[in-house]
Image (cartoon, rainbow, N blue to C red; front, side, top):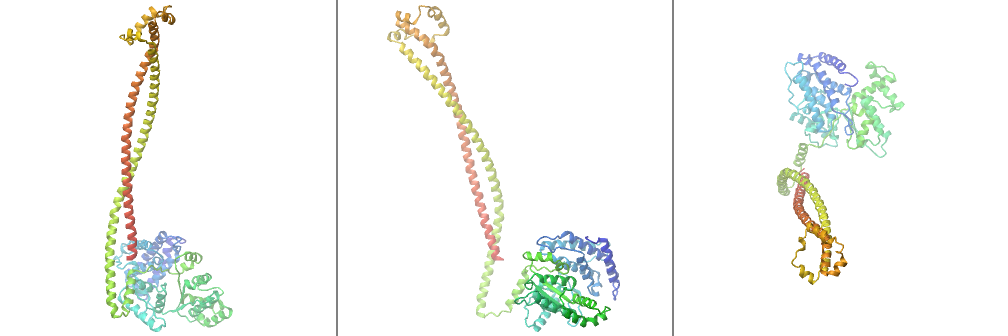
Length: 612
């Protein structure tokens, strides 16, 4: 705990509670007196958990708790009448109520309130339902924490105000309606207020603020005079201070309970909040009184100051006057939390939070709207000729709304049912796209191999074709060497059968001879000349023929291998085209499902707007 340790806090307030409970005139049961230490421990635990659970943020800048809040909780418990201390369970409920008023009323949303309810429930369980030091009988908290009502409504105007427990029942409702009727009879501006549950809960927080109508009724019930500021043209600091002086004079001089209502509309200048901050902090506004005004206050209050045992000096009387102001004047400050101004004001003027009890208003609950509608419709005089038409229109509206509700449920069902299909379609599309990526890489690899092989085959074919042309040229030379006699003579002789062995023998016997020269042979026989030329030409042609034959055979094998690879490439391309078409179909299906979901979502939003 900040500033003061838990042990010191427990010690201080234990003495206060023990002294308070033991000094009750009527005498309290022993079970109630034993609650003193449990109450203090529960207060320390609740305060500590609230500080460690809720932290100030830009949108929740007033989530700041200090020992003053814990003291406010203690003060609220001690404020109750002696009747609340006759039953131990009522004291525990009083602790719950004051904890809600100090901490829960400051929270702005349901999530934080639910979190606080859990903190409160844990403290109830630890200290009152299943306490560490067993009680004679565990307590039963039948009411919800926020439904507990402790307030000081007097049963009659002449009776003193007694802070006691009320039940949220018809009795409390009738009590508030009676006071509302009394207010409307005495006021020139009657209020047509519908006391629904939330309004009743706000009204029961007399020392806390509600809406303007609730403030008027609350002031009426609490026998307080209400002052509202009238903002006129050129309403500035001087006029505002004059209005504040009226409130201070009534509260300090006439000893009358007074409520000053200040809203955002009244705060024309931010300097107004400086005076309000000082008033809430110390009960006084520096330099607000002129010298003659202060003298008049001293003259009117000097006797009363002397009767209370104070001095009659100027400072003593003014201090007594400020004490009366703090006791009798209640400032109700209503501000909108929207925008930055609210956070800025709380940061600049911390007393607005530290010396106030916050009451956060939510949106109107549905049951409150229904109660207001029933009241207004019941008091509305409708001509008879319009009733049937309005009934028919209303029934048609209900029928349409019922049909739209069914359509809404059907669309919600469809929306929920189509979500798995979208997920499956997304997974299928992702899988197909991954498969397509792999297949495309395979196609690219095979295309690269086929292109490379095709280039090699083309190069080899060109080389084979060149060899064939050379061989063809030598063949022509041989034909030119042949004449008619030579052909006739050697037509039946297969010269290709001449192997290397025979050629060696011919070369050794004839060709090496000095007489076997081209010119000599030509003089002897032209046929021999042709044979001579043929032998030398055939020697060159034969290896080239063999090489051409080998090249053609190798070319044929390469062309066959290339054809196989082209066939495999076509198969891969066909498979890739199939997967691509499958992927396109899956993407199209996914897009259609997403379109259906989007249309359904838009329809649901429109239906929700129409129905709500």
